[in-house]
Image (cartoon, rainbow, N blue to C red):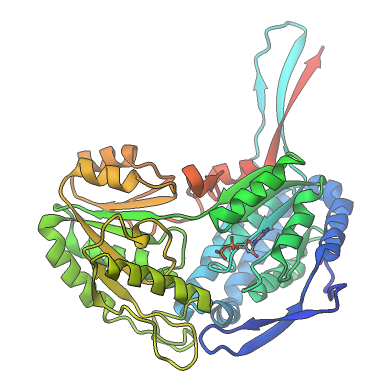
Length: 470
Ligand code: ADP
């Protein structure tokens, strides 16, 4: 915290558990609200100085941290896999993805341009400056233990903001490693604090109640996002929220089936389906439903479930027992309402670890939980549709609006769907659209604000208008 490694004033520690083996892999200090207050005090003492550094100097630190992430990818990926469960190859991919946000924002920080606006008075000049918002806070989830941090930390530091991070209590180790990297990369003491603890409501409230924290960026559930938005009102903090999703993935008759299947598998099964942009509802046009499902089942049945630390494993465990229970509840509910299970369909009988096998269910309809809530698990739920108009209406029938995907070779249809689907991110013949230079974020109850891209840094900048009398 604040450039020093500290125990909590609580003198308590908590366990970090490997979801593949249920072993305790580490114990970390269990921070409480007083620790959070210390982190805010430290940030407050250095905020002004940090805001006054040169963008090019801040960029050098970000670049250095990114290059250290690349050099240490193996070690960082192993830590991620043992605390989060995702297969090692995916963890390596996430470290590179996480570093890409630092690289991108190192450059964007140098391009925080203001404006000079023509005045309507001969004796006045109008200037617009952009200034860092001040102390910022990030509350991050466990499913991308590194990338959800750097996607916030990169623009915050590049813009000249200090940041306090409260990572998920399920994956504190990756967050602490990022702090270590920034320490080695030469980030001045106090600019970054990582505060880990199990009492998320208390730690969150300590951040939200403090007037000095001027911005909160949160990635997690819509439920917690709403709590934070209410809490932000009292001090009028700026907010960015990346919340839940319920992504539709639509396959039309004219799609390239192999491309659609390959992308559907990636989109559905990456991170065991535990991502907010995972395809939750797969709609297939009736004529191609059978060949699509056959190919999908064939591909998914080749996936290998196990401890992600072993090479060749493509499906790891879910994060915790409650996640397995939720997936089980969704699949059972679908079966009760008439769905057929073609693959998987019940929790693994492995003696250790929170495993649920890749599952494919068909004959899915809107009555089922899987069509209404985020499943956050490796369940491909497939429904059939007849017409474009019908499927657009069904896809839009959700309070969520994060990502939507579709597969078609008809260029007119690509444009119609891109315009009509009420989602912040559209993958047209693309199941993995996320990348540092593109704006990531949702509409409706999926959130507010955008991360990554040239827009991402604006979330950490205030506009200041200066009127100059001559
Ligand atoms: P998920 O379901 O993906 O775990 P959550 O929204 O529960 O999503 O958690 C995302 C982050 O929000 C985690 O860091 C968690 O500790 C934190 N969190 C959970 N509840 C609260 C709360 N009441 N106030 C602040 N942060 C919270």
